[in-house]
Image 1 (spheres, rainbow, N blue to C red):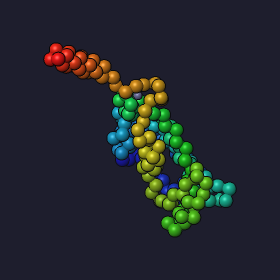
Image 2 (image 1 turned 45 degrees about the vertical axis):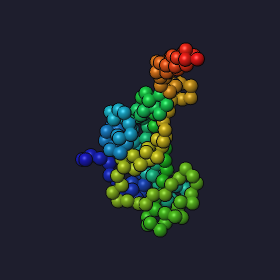
Image 3 (image 1 turned 90 degrees about the horizontal axis):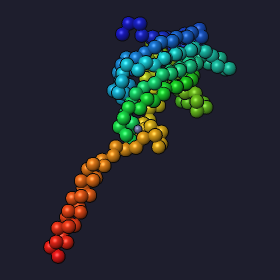
Image 4 (image 1 turned 60 degrees about the horizontal axis):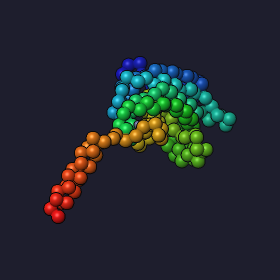
Length: 167
Ligand SMILES: [Zn+2]
């Protein structure tokens, strides 16, 4: 799609570049399948910088919200998205392992001259979506089948009555 941010990640980091874009969830194909309303918009940003050791790094941030189905009450649930990820760029694949030893909040990423920002953002968002998203505890309940339960109850009492009559 024209205009989609594709960056040379090493250059981007070394030049301390920044890019911001606003993306409808419908523009992220894999994510769009997981949501109810693909018109929800996400703000995606990427900043290049170098860490204290002079290594090229990227800072990815995504904010916004997505509407998914609550797995308890099956009603729409708005999930806030606040993603904040830092990556140290590895120039070669064999460097990835060493960089992986970093602190938990920093990941290593293979340098890519055609880094697709939205694909990276989408990968990270997909990792953050809970397996079974639900409203807060006590904010909703499972659907009540009270009318069915009532019928079942009366069927049992009718059966009970019949049994009693037989005796
Ligand atoms: Zn719910």
